[in-house]
Image 1 (tube, rainbow, N blue to C red):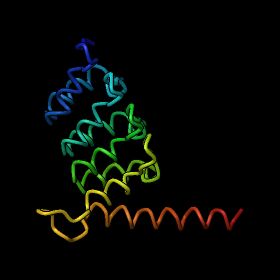
Image 2 (image 1 turned 90 degrees about the horizontal axis):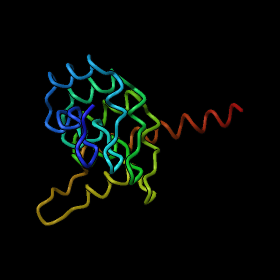
Image 3 (image 1 turned 45 degrees about the vertical axis):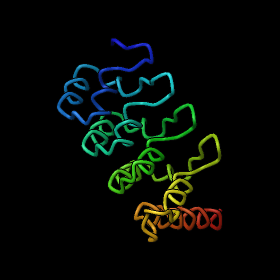
Length: 155
C-alpha cells in the first residue's frame, strides 16, 4: 500500500472524506488496511469518527472490530474523536462494539466522558443544556459501574 510522508493511506483519506464506496473497494482488496496508523497514531477509524461518517465507521468496524480500541499518540480512541465531533450516533455505534471504551483514559487522564463534559460547558454562544453525548455517556458510565460492582460482589 502506498503512503505519503505522514503515513496516510488511501483508506485514511477516503475515511476522512466519507467515501464509503471507496472504503468498501479498498477493504475488498486488503482487510488489514484499517490497522495502518498515521505518524500521529490515528487510524482511518479515528478520522471517520471525528468527521462524523457513520457509514464509514460501521464498514471499518465490520471489517475489523478490534480497531475500536486502537489509541493514537495521545492515547485517544475513536470514541474520544466521536465526542470531539459532537456525534451522538457515532458514540452509540462505537459503544455497541466495545462498551469498555467509555473507561479508556488518554495520556492526560481523560475519558470520552470527561471530554463530553468539557464540550458541554456553557460558553457565550453555546446552549446551556447538557449535550446529548454527555447524557448518553453518563448513562453508559453508570451502567458499566453497576455491572462492575455486581461482579465484585459476586466474587
